[in-house]
Image 1 (cartoon, rainbow, N blue to C red):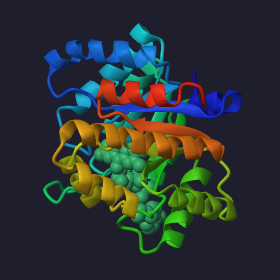
Image 2 (image 1 turned 180 degrees about the vertical axis):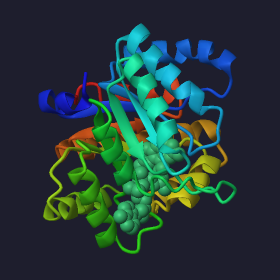
Image 3 (image 1 turned 180 degrees about the horizontal axis):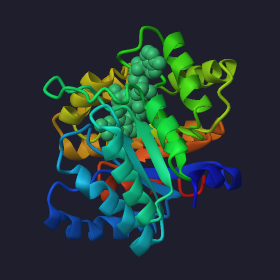
Length: 286
Ligand code: FAD
C-alpha cells in the first residue's frame, strides 16, 4: 500500500524505523525482531539506508522485502542521494519495482568528509523529483522541527521543505525532538508556508547516555530542563534510565496524540523492548 493512501484512511499513523543488520547472517536473525515488531501492528516500518559507500545498503531492500512478503507490513525504503549517481539510483529503483516496494523516503544523506559527493543529486528535492519521474512510487521526505544543522535559518529550511513537498513528497517524517512545543511551533510555521501534507513526529526513546550524547551532536536537538534533570539523576543506573527514558517518550507521545498529530514515527533502534514498552504505554490511545 502507498503510505499516501494510509494517511487518507487513518490518523494518527504509527510507524517504526529500523536499520538493516551489518552482516548477511544477521539478516536471518532479524526475524525475531520482526516477529515482535509485527505483533505491535505498526502502519508501516521504514528501513534506513547508509549515506553511501556502505555494504549495509545492500541489505536495506532485502529487509524491506522481508517486511512486506513475510510479515505483511508496508515498508518504506530510505534512499540517500549525495553519494549516488543517477545510474546507481536507476538500479536501486529497478530493484524496488521488482520487489513491488512502493514507498521511498528520499534523503540527501549526511556529508562524509572522506567521500567526494557524486554531484548528480545535490538535495533531497532532486531525488524526490527524480523518483517521481522514474516510477510509480510514493515519496516522502525528512523535516527538522529545530531546523537542519546546515540550514542558514529555520525560515530558509522551511522554504526548502516547501520545495521538497512541491516536488512530490506526500508526507514528512520529523527528526527526533525532546520538546513538543518546538514541534507545535514548527507545525505552525509549515502551515504558514503552505505545507499541507501530513507530518509525523519522530520520537526517539532515550535509554542510555552515550546514545543521547551522540544524537545531540549529530542532529543538534535541544534538551529541555526536565529531560536533563532525568538524565543527570539516572545516568549511572541502566535500568532506571531505561524506565525513565520510556516514560519520557510515552509522555511526549500522549501529549502529541492529544494535539491530534498526523502520526508518530518511533525510532526503535531495533530494540524490541523499547517498541513494546512504548506501544503498551499508548495502547488505548490509538
Ligand atoms: P535536504 O532536504 O536536502 O536538506 C539538507 C540541507 O540543505 C538543509 O539545510 C536544507 O535547508 C538545505 N537545502 C535544501 N534544498 C536546498 C536548496 N535548493 N538550496 C540550498 N539549500 C538547500 N541519513 C542516512 O544516511 N540514512 C537514513 O536512512 C536516514 N534516515 C533519516 C530519516 C529521517 C526521518 C530523518 C529526519 C533523517 C534521516 N537521515 C538519514 C539523515 C539525513 O540524511 C540528514 O539529516 C541529511 O543531512 C539531510 O538530509 P535531507 O534529506 O533532510 O536533506
